[in-house]
Amino acid sequence: MTASIKPAPAARRSARGTWHRPLLICAALMAVLVALCGVGMAVDDRTLLGESVWAKPMKFGFAFALYTGTLAWLLARLDRGRRLARWVGTVFAVATTAEVAAITVQAARGTISHFNADQSDPITLALVPILTLGVMVIVIAQLVVAIIVLMQRTGGRDLNRAIRAGLGLATVGMLIPVYWMVTGIHERTVTDANGNEIPMYQGHGIGDPDGHGMPLTNWSVTGGDFRVPHFFALHGIQVLLVLTVVLVALSARHAWLRDERVRARLVGSAALGYSGLVAVVTWQAGRGQSLIHPDAATLAAFAAVLLVGAATTVRVVVTARRAAAAAAVAAPAGLVEPESAAQNKCIAK
Image (cartoon, rainbow, N blue to C red):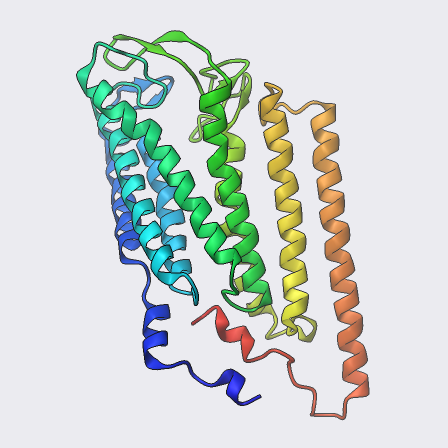
């Protein structure tokens, strides 16, 4: 038993402790972009499809700052396939930087980035391959990383479950834009911030291709919008990781949470409910329905997801509390120790 918790060799500790540098650089660049776009929104009053020209690069920068930072941390925890994972992580970072850079250039020019079919603009023609192929490269890199992670344990049961479920959700979230590009063609012409007529072959909205967006997100309020499930699925991993950290923190005060198997079941319950949420908003968007205008069928689906998630969570909590109470009664006073106290520290490493 002592051998199982022996410190790893120095070389292995060093390899696992180093966050992926290209992904960290990418996350830092995205964070800087968010700040610059905030300034741009304050001083530049140009609008594009109903929102500031700087809103889109700001949203992409924020999303990728979170996700590449998460990947940089995750790749430092791998025991197997580290070399391949780090190489793929570098590809992901480069593709992401190129994709967001192209979006930012088009924003600065006051014109459309994705779905732009203007054949008369040489800059747009040069950037379109980056904007389309970049998505495919990012998705493929994401799939490879997910497979590598599935081949190993990357922490305790609770953390491992959060990472696996989160990567699965993120992969689904990245596949949704690919589905957009190949299934729904809505050719039309829009006016950019410079007053130029720009032909487009696709849009974010369903039923209303360009939508009439909500504040900040610009998700359509007049039709479906695949950006909704894309957002929720992509950031599911952060939600589950935060939940894992919270459960570990709470275990210091609640004995029934000190068993990592209980925390893993709670994370699994949350992942199930979150996956149900993603499924419902995807179905809702596909039917051309706005997130904020659900019909009876959508409300029933949301209610079913909520009930299933609540039922599984309550069952786990009740069972764990009973087991902890029984153990406290059965064990001699002062000898009850947390079953996995040492493992509670795995997230902080």
